Length: 113
Image 1 (cartoon, rainbow, N blue to C red):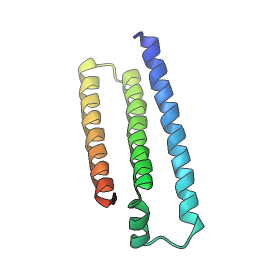
Image 2 (cartoon, rainbow, N blue to C red):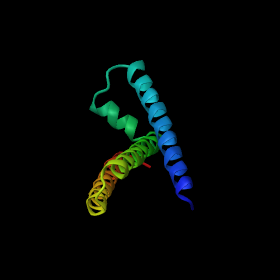
Image 3 (cartoon, one colour):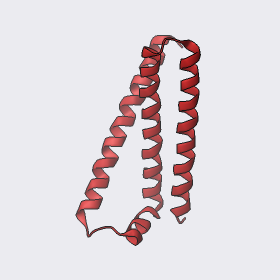
Image 4 (spheres, rainbow, N blue to C red):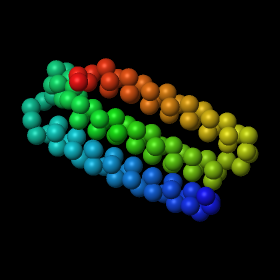
Protein backbone atom coordinates (compact mmCIF):
# COMPACT_ATOMS: atom_id res chain seq x y z
CA UNK A 1 0.00 0.00 0.00
CA UNK A 2 1.33 3.41 -0.88
CA UNK A 3 2.01 6.17 1.63
CA UNK A 4 -0.81 8.19 0.11
CA UNK A 5 -3.29 5.35 0.67
CA UNK A 6 -2.16 5.01 4.29
CA UNK A 7 -2.78 8.72 4.80
CA UNK A 8 -6.23 8.31 3.28
CA UNK A 9 -6.99 5.43 5.66
CA UNK A 10 -5.95 7.54 8.67
CA UNK A 11 -8.05 10.44 7.38
CA UNK A 12 -11.08 8.17 6.92
CA UNK A 13 -10.65 6.59 10.38
CA UNK A 14 -10.46 10.05 11.94
CA UNK A 15 -13.65 11.17 10.19
CA UNK A 16 -15.64 7.98 10.90
CA UNK A 17 -14.59 7.88 14.54
CA UNK A 18 -15.41 11.57 14.95
CA UNK A 19 -18.85 11.06 13.42
CA UNK A 20 -19.64 8.12 15.72
CA UNK A 21 -18.38 10.01 18.79
CA UNK A 22 -20.60 12.97 17.89
CA UNK A 23 -23.68 10.82 17.30
CA UNK A 24 -23.12 8.88 20.53
CA UNK A 25 -22.78 12.09 22.54
CA UNK A 26 -25.97 13.51 21.02
CA UNK A 27 -27.84 10.29 21.87
CA UNK A 28 -26.38 10.27 25.40
CA UNK A 29 -27.41 13.89 25.97
CA UNK A 30 -30.91 13.10 24.73
CA UNK A 31 -31.22 10.09 27.05
CA UNK A 32 -29.85 11.99 30.04
CA UNK A 33 -32.08 15.05 29.51
CA UNK A 34 -35.36 13.32 28.67
CA UNK A 35 -36.06 11.71 32.02
CA UNK A 36 -35.55 12.18 35.73
CA UNK A 37 -32.13 12.64 37.24
CA UNK A 38 -30.04 9.51 36.80
CA UNK A 39 -28.80 8.00 40.04
CA UNK A 40 -26.58 4.94 40.43
CA UNK A 41 -29.36 2.37 40.05
CA UNK A 42 -30.70 4.03 36.88
CA UNK A 43 -27.21 4.26 35.40
CA UNK A 44 -26.61 0.61 36.24
CA UNK A 45 -29.96 -0.38 34.71
CA UNK A 46 -29.22 1.64 31.57
CA UNK A 47 -25.72 0.23 31.11
CA UNK A 48 -26.82 -3.33 31.86
CA UNK A 49 -28.70 -3.44 28.55
CA UNK A 50 -26.50 -5.19 25.95
CA UNK A 51 -27.24 -2.69 23.16
CA UNK A 52 -26.21 0.26 25.35
CA UNK A 53 -23.07 -1.53 26.50
CA UNK A 54 -22.10 -2.40 22.93
CA UNK A 55 -22.72 1.20 21.81
CA UNK A 56 -20.65 2.44 24.77
CA UNK A 57 -17.86 -0.02 24.02
CA UNK A 58 -17.82 1.17 20.40
CA UNK A 59 -17.78 4.77 21.65
CA UNK A 60 -14.68 4.17 23.77
CA UNK A 61 -13.06 2.11 20.99
CA UNK A 62 -13.58 4.99 18.56
CA UNK A 63 -12.23 7.48 21.11
CA UNK A 64 -9.06 5.39 21.39
CA UNK A 65 -8.77 5.13 17.58
CA UNK A 66 -9.38 8.88 17.24
CA UNK A 67 -6.72 9.63 19.87
CA UNK A 68 -4.22 7.24 18.26
CA UNK A 69 -4.58 8.71 14.78
CA UNK A 70 -4.51 12.31 15.99
CA UNK A 71 -1.56 12.02 18.35
CA UNK A 72 0.35 9.77 15.92
CA UNK A 73 -0.02 12.36 13.16
CA UNK A 74 1.19 15.16 15.43
CA UNK A 75 4.19 13.08 16.53
CA UNK A 76 5.07 12.13 12.95
CA UNK A 77 4.94 15.79 11.95
CA UNK A 78 6.77 17.39 14.87
CA UNK A 79 9.13 14.86 16.50
CA UNK A 80 12.14 14.57 14.21
CA UNK A 81 14.28 12.08 16.14
CA UNK A 82 13.22 8.62 15.02
CA UNK A 83 14.14 6.85 18.26
CA UNK A 84 12.27 9.39 20.39
CA UNK A 85 9.25 9.29 18.09
CA UNK A 86 9.21 5.48 18.19
CA UNK A 87 9.51 5.47 22.00
CA UNK A 88 6.66 7.94 22.42
CA UNK A 89 4.48 5.95 20.00
CA UNK A 90 5.14 2.73 21.96
CA UNK A 91 4.21 4.42 25.26
CA UNK A 92 1.11 5.91 23.63
CA UNK A 93 0.06 2.55 22.16
CA UNK A 94 0.54 0.77 25.50
CA UNK A 95 -1.38 3.49 27.34
CA UNK A 96 -4.30 3.40 24.90
CA UNK A 97 -4.34 -0.41 24.94
CA UNK A 98 -4.41 -0.39 28.74
CA UNK A 99 -7.28 2.10 28.76
CA UNK A 100 -9.18 0.01 26.20
CA UNK A 101 -8.83 -3.15 28.29
CA UNK A 102 -9.83 -1.28 31.44
CA UNK A 103 -12.98 0.19 29.84
CA UNK A 104 -13.90 -3.22 28.41
CA UNK A 105 -13.57 -4.84 31.82
CA UNK A 106 -15.79 -2.17 33.41
CA UNK A 107 -18.49 -2.43 30.74
CA UNK A 108 -18.52 -6.23 30.71
CA UNK A 109 -18.79 -6.31 34.50
CA UNK A 110 -22.06 -4.36 34.29
CA UNK A 111 -23.76 -6.04 31.32
CA UNK A 112 -26.25 -8.82 31.98
CA UNK A 113 -26.81 -11.16 29.07
